[in-house]
Structure formats: structure tokens, C-alpha cells
Image (tube, rainbow, N blue to C red):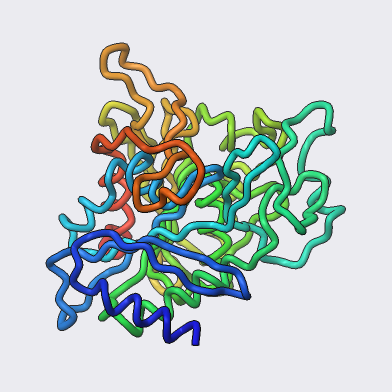
Length: 348
């Protein structure tokens, strides 16, 4: 019955040209996602689907509007279907909305997770999801989000004429994207993690090759790419260790390094001639903190700084008790990310 309801909802949005909210039941839990189908969609033509995953405290509509600056406009420009899953969530003692995806996919223990942060008097202690004990340093839910997204991809492939599936994750959403491709690499064409390096000791590499980009920011204090301890006392893999594991796992024989400058400067490394001709790429923003590319750049001062984007909702998610999104200006970095993701198929 739950899939019948799901398919009826989907059938109503095929040619809507407006973002819709779709509810479904997963493991007896009500979940929802947002989907945008451009007016140009033609079921006779194979079309890409691009998923966008929000970070800790963010929302699906906050990702679309504030983080990415209106990602649906890029769906129109490049003719793809955009999907924004919402994580499970709850409200803490201060009635603050707490959201995030579960990034841990392998078997672990509370003791192992409890070793992933500083002592309690030296770190920020995050609220725990109800009925979910993930150890002293745990902050993610216990649900299997990889299973939820795999089912969602499978159902969308039934309803739409899908060419390829791409994943983009921001912050903890990027951590989840890495975990997802480790578990279901053949279900996606390529994925990119934005400022979402794995927790230390929980990095993974898929059993089968898949195109992947790790984007990090040199001055990031939240998920630092060059040091293991974050400002809040959690431990993370470095970007160099992470990329080294991927390129070695897939026997990449060649690499290309370049510097790219818009307002901020980016160090790009592409590893190619890998197994099954996939590409692995690392992008290091040399100027920014824990930010979407150039979202924190001020043109007057010509400096980049941290600004909290995406912990908000647009009208489509007004049932969530949190701030309303209001910063919807275009983000140059959104198209930069998207073009890099699509280009992995074309690099030599």
C-alpha cells in the first residue's frame, strides 16, 4: 500500500514545473523529499537526476534555496530532475530543529564511536536522536539512510526515463554521500562531497569503481582537511589520506593538477586511467572556511568568511519549526560544482 500511495503522488508531478513535496513510509517512519521536474522534461528522452543532501541542521528546501542559491534554476538550464531528500529530525530541549543523515554504514560499536572526539569537557556535546545511542561522540541518527535513498533511486528509475544519477552532499550530507557510494556504487554515475570528509577511522572505499570528487576548504574549522581535530572536538580524515585510499583502490595510473581562480582559488587534482575508466578528483579551496564555493566571499573586502546558510526552510517545508530562508541569490559555486561533476565522464 505504501508504494501505491508513493506512485500516485509521483504521477501527479511529472510535468508540473514546480517543486513538490513527496511523503513515503520507510521502516515505519514517515519520510519526505522534494522533487523538481523541469518543464522541458520529455519521458521519451533519457534525463539525469541530481540529488542534493543537506548538512547538519539544514533542510531539503534550505539546500535548494540558501546553500545552492536556487538549484532548481540549474535543473532548468541543464535539463535534469532535482531531488532533495529530507533527513530524519527532532527538536531538542530548546525546541531547535536537529537534522542530519546517518553517515556510518559499517558494523561498529558505541565504544568505537566514543573514541572519535575529545574529552567531554573539551568539546561541543551535540543532542542525540531519540532512542538512538551511538556512543559518547555520536550525533547521527540510527536509521539506515543508504537503504532509504537506494529505494528512492530505484522507484524514480521506474517512474522516469533516467539516464544517470548524480549525488551532491553538503557538510554531513557530503559525509553521507561518501558512505552511500561505498555501499551502492553501481546505482550512481558520479558523486561529490562538499566539505564532508569522513569521521576519523570511518572512511570507506567502494568495492566497485565509481566517479567521485572530494571538495574541501583549506581554512575549514568544522571538518578540517589538513588536521584531524575540528573546532568542536571531533576527529576527521584528512583529504590527502582520503583521496590516496581511493586512487590506490582503483589503480589510477595518471594525474593532472591545476589551479583555478574565480574570486577564490581552487587546487584541482584529477586522477585518471583508473579501473573501468573512472575518475577521482580532489578540489581544495585555498581561501574559504566551511562554505559552499564562494558563498562566503565578500566582493568589497575581497575576503572569504564563514556564514551559516541553509538552517532554514522555504514555504514548501513550513511545517518544520525553524527560520524561514531569505538568501536566495545565485551561487556561482553551484554551477562550478555541477559542471565538475558532469565533466568526469569527459576527461581523458
